Length: 480
Ligand code: NAD
Image 1 (spheres, rainbow, N blue to C red):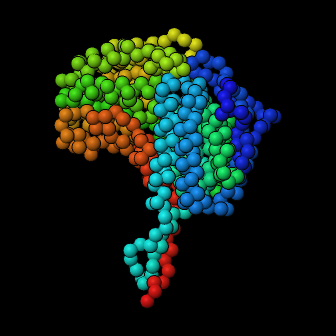
Image 2: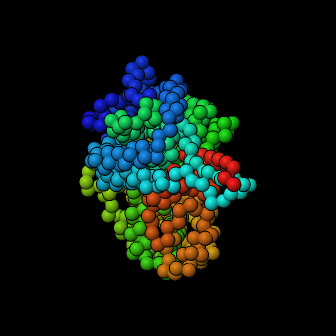
Image 3: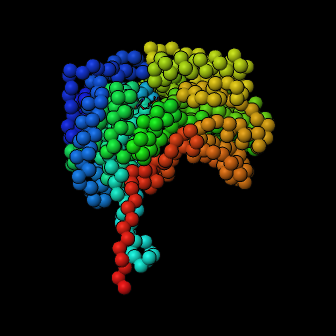
């Protein structure tokens, strides 16, 4: 695709874009039209090693907090100054509606603004003690080179969370975006290249994911692996990294319950469901996967939600009228279709949609399934599509048990007019993010992450930066 932010379609290490011509290549495809947007070199272990070498070189000099603050604020400014073009690239390679892509760029910029604000917490300080007759000074050292591996569903947002934390901590990075959506990262590197970052401080490789991942896990100098993606790949990276005892920050899959009690404001609950569920055509880790509605509200909730869902417009993300874009590829659409078929085989009823939608890309009609239960794949696995699967429950205890009935623990949502109940239920849910009368997802200023098989560590806020920090404690004899 033509873009002023994509003058060179290549990876980047040691301070320059690397044109490699004698490589195998791969295509980046527009999910709405299936047209090829770009053909890129397939980098592997040798390029990943060069990128790590460059990052190791950048470790020689730790940037001051003030220097990092300037970089973070410059990146925020560059992102905000290029929202339109960056959003066009995100929509081209990911398929999401253009307004969502613009929101993603703004969201990304927010991580840099917040990281800049958090830097004061990284200043060295003396503890207010003289234990053992010593003064105790505490420093926040960069953990070392960080390997950042990101998914396709938020091509900029998921990288922004990691890169802001790593830069704030002073860590050089080797970045590996998804091969389905690498163009947003390349465009971002065009902006980073214009900055005064030291050579090797930021590096970009893509192509052979297992080969690159292996290098990042096996190289001892890479001290942090920060990964967002599926639980299966997260486990694999943890296994590969175990011999080197790296810090692992793993943002993995979810299976979010969206629990609506009888006393909830149903219009508000439906509004929040619409905003939460259909973002990126349902391909987000935090979107409601199991909509659990109490008996007394069930029929009314199904009617109101179905009416809203029937009116959604499906189409290419670049079309301003579009509410729901295509799924990322045909494989994703077959997976959604097979989960809907499985649910119907096991007794669910299709109230809305339930089929592919017309168009060259992998479009799928917004769908409502009712009569869902725990035996169905759609309640056990991530749907990752525009399908609302609704199940009924009898009382508070049953709602909590069903909500917790998953190995995942990323996001959950609870709707009720009873503030005590909201508190009571949240305390018993094993999810890292619990929306109370809201379907909102993460924000840059607050730590976000999963419990159980949804991962380790947090992104956003001060906690997101500390994933890249080693605390060093220096005692020295106190003056008598
Ligand atoms: P994925 O696990 O298939 O891929 C994620 C990244 O890992 C990609 O860059 C991919 O190329 C790379 N990868 C794949 N195999 C690898 C290997 N062997 N070694 C190294 N890297 C490898 O996930 P995806 O399909 O891109 O993204 C969807 C998944 O991400 C969903 O499960 C979703 O829930 C999850 N996700 C989680 C969060 C969160 O915050 N917890 C956010 C967004 C997405």
